Length: 234
Image (cartoon, rainbow, N blue to C red; front, side, top):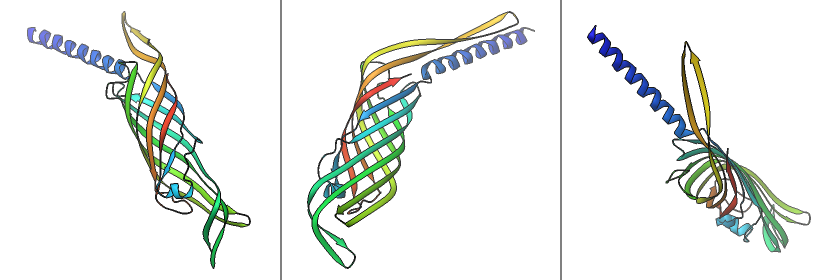
């Protein structure tokens, strides 16, 4: 009987410890959702620079993220749109059975959708300034053209895109809330809670995108720039 009683007590202690660990892990994770919207100007590189050499202010990025692993890791989905255009200038363009030299209008735009993984080296909560590293990889669609009067050369391509970036969140407002859930049965009740953070921040990051999607004049396409926007955590 003594052995049985001791065993029961040990099992009860183990069960209590397991519940405590489970509750702690849930509280740490928080199941938080992040949303971001950024202005995303870019500078063309490689073959894209030959088509449209000037920096473009016409870029935007939207983000959705889910926080896991004690708020150090955020898994997300990003959407981007970038448009590059060159002023008219005299250009020689190959056409069937020859070439044409005239003032041409040139443009290219990219529509991108890709999963992302963001890592906070210091965790997502500790300080007002929260540095992060991020990698995104997915699919993009490029549309580009060189136009002059009734002459044109166009390209519509799809391809793989990858984008590493590094940046910071500067917290404007942050608040921890606790949601509680209780369950009762046969005169006993258990209550567990988990901490969730609601937050509004300014986001700034440096990003470099490169893609296998060709444009009308080149296959070496990449662009780099500074992303500035707002970020909130729900």
